[in-house]
Image (tube, rainbow, N blue to C red; front, side):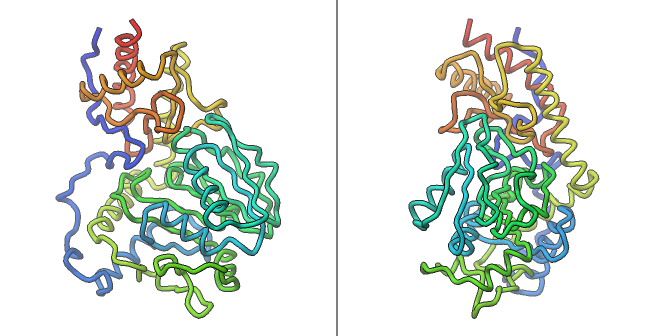
Length: 371
């Protein structure tokens, strides 16, 4: 029978993910709107976003946070084009976005001494191949495969190279070993449900040292430049952005950060996401027609949860359309390059009660298309 209870919020998209519970656009401060982002109020708001990010993420002393254009993609491109080149590069990819970074390094920057290690959807690559002398590029959470890194033990403490981590669907949802990460990038639209177009770039002191001692051989677009005269443009990390940001998006991000604080901070946000995943785990254990795409429990993402079903691609598409038309779940089809299946976001902005209400509908939809 068709279930009678629907999720109160059917937004299960993996990016942008749903807004925080109780979100109200009217509650955002508007005093910075219509003002220059370089005015005192504009800089203060941007600096507040930077400072609160560092505080809530518990970043080590000396790490810098900057707001940059182009979402997580812009932040990652900026990092790669600015930092890599003086050493060999080891790239680890197991889904579409990681593969995209590999393509940029190999085909756009055309660096020699580049190694690309890949894993199939649902698996991780062989991290034991990482060399401490090389720079390392990897994603922490594979948004399109539902597979996350389970530990950073494979990253050497005495490494000579830098680690550059795309952490866009992991930050604020998973514990990040910052001592192992020299560069991290993420976007507001992931995990916290912020608006798109802005990225966050986090640099360790080692990354800053590289920036100030190395000049790339290729021309650098203005929008990528992090140094001037051989010194870090420190203003980027104090609220003086490279280009004009949307102050409305900044206010929206500040609202999300305030919400994280209100629920108990980073640890509470992570726990909420993991609790949501546990609901899915129990569901999978009880039904033999659905399984996680992740091959092992310890690498199963607690944000972008990917499922494979005993159904063909057309049947899965029918399920997705059914759930959408019923107003039960929006945007939960697998990523276009991934195996046919479902991808359901369960980060902290998703309520556990909505996850629980969704499950009977997934069962109903499956029975409808496979009957």
